[in-house]
Length: 115
Length: 115
Image (tube, each protein chain N blue to C red):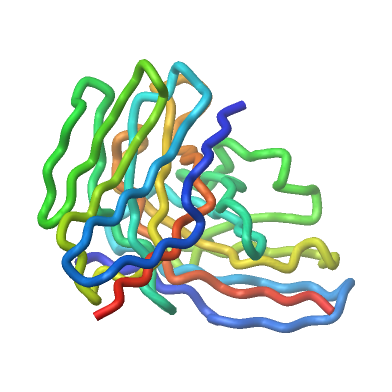
């Protein structure tokens, strides 16, 4: 089955610096990719969803990169600020078949942005 | 934005007892999910549910687990009897569509401790 590995588990950066988080996956049928943010005590909030055909996706203050050849999904928070401090999770799902609705998550990255 | 609520936020029970975890999904959503996260590990898919039926379940969804949503009320996960290894945070999610690209909206989780 699908294995999703997320690195690093913990990350501290100074305000204004970049924060880079990576997930690798194993299933070549993986097609949909998601990044979620979770603040303490709160729900997971979707940051971005990426379909397999797109490689670079720009969000507000972050970029998501998808490298299908290497089976790697990355989140780059540019110019991080203290409000970005949270846990970040990648999630992957396959294209149709028996995997409908089933998300495979990374273990999460706890990001701390130091003022 | 749309919110998924989970009740209670924490639950402590003795091994062998029954527990029911409650989820109040987004009001117009029809597809529901439970995920389990053991401390320090990945969030893992348990089950998805639609139109009163379990559509898919993982090997983590033991015979002691059951789900239901009677009359459009809470979507519940019942564990009877509980075991020590059931200690985890349980996340409920809902979505408006079955397709894998559909955003799943997550609740904040219920932390279950089995003593």
